Length: 197
Image (cartoon, rainbow, N blue to C red; front, side):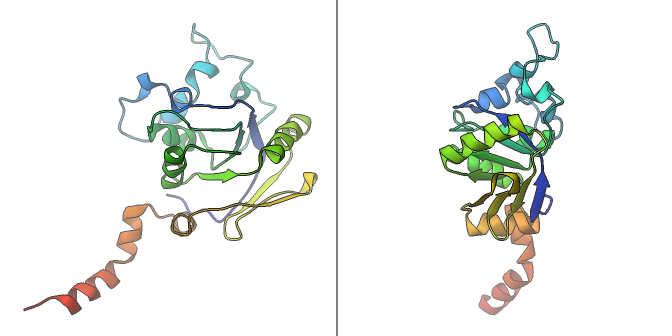
């Protein structure tokens, strides 16, 4: 994974509640086992018409909005526990997702794949969504070390929670295996000290 410390970006608004993992990446695209290429089918049934043409009314097809921050409605990532949803979001280019609630399994999958899910109060989420529509180029600044989301134009400075282990992994660009490898010398020393002849 790439290291994550700070991020400054514009944002894409998706003010829809209860977006489930089948809407994020439809089940028919789950046959592949490589994480690469899933972004092409992110929100596939919303991004494209049944005829296979781009849907001009869907936000990802609107050049007004761009950025590596997705601001979504409440209860993002509900439904089945497919990790492919996080793969699709990451492969598309999203690094941060902001909502007022995330399904627990999706939240874990996002963190395991280098995406930072940030929970903020519902009233502030709605204010952010309104502001992005009014000012599509508004800048979001995320500081993971200090666990703070800042949107200067709104006067918003919001602290967010994150599991300390997952925070350390994101900052260092570790997945769980990378973390264990980083401790190989400590593990070897422990084994040497505790090996009986």
